[in-house]
Image 1 (cartoon, helix red, strand yellow):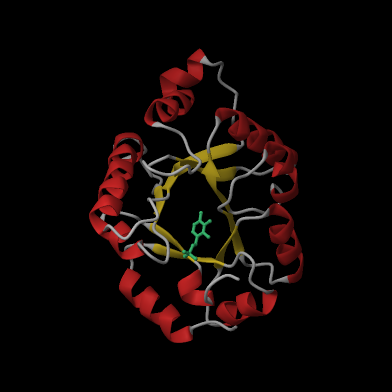
Image 2 (cartoon, protein in one colour):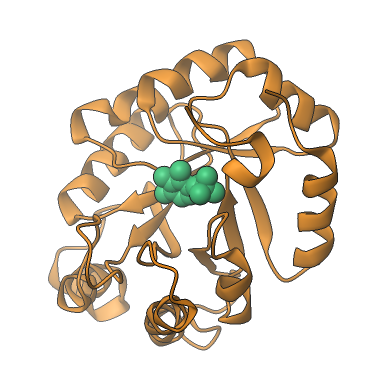
Length: 229
Ligand SMILES: *Cc1c(COP(=O)(O)O)cnc(C)c1O
């Protein structure tokens, strides 16, 4: 199975400068990644730590690797030296571990907080109250409360979410809208001046709706690489 080049260009043209494309290459061989790389793609997303580490060591060094899966605390150390963006952070505990491992690598790692928006499904993520609690640590007041000096090696760059797996576009749209409003609340340019924040939402089946609802980063796998076995 190889890459659908026409689809790649079609997606890029559709996204324009509204959203960045992360090519989700999980379970796909290095040759497929190389094919898309040769067309100019540099941002790739992976779900499994071991697979990501294996690919990172064999593929070109200028690839920006995104970890989009559920990350276990004890595995952070394997990706901390090189990972570009961790999309699925769903606890303060995990954020602290990323901070610790980032410090060991002398890096600041950008992270997105994953918010649970798919009401009928068990997907990972913070609910609104948990999100508020994590964000408190990062606001000026919160940092003082929790003792500043903490979490210097992580940067909470925005939010990530997955909509329900459904044929109902209005349900998907309303879930994305919920995420967008939380994003505006915590990451609007007024709240976070100077750094453009990231709203990572949208996959092969729903990325167009996601972009209409304000996504600026989409994670697309099967449309580019074909269905996963
Ligand atoms: C697999 C995966 C994707 C890509 O899914 P497709 O439907 O193949 O585009 C995007 N985001 C996450 C978190 C994933 O696990």
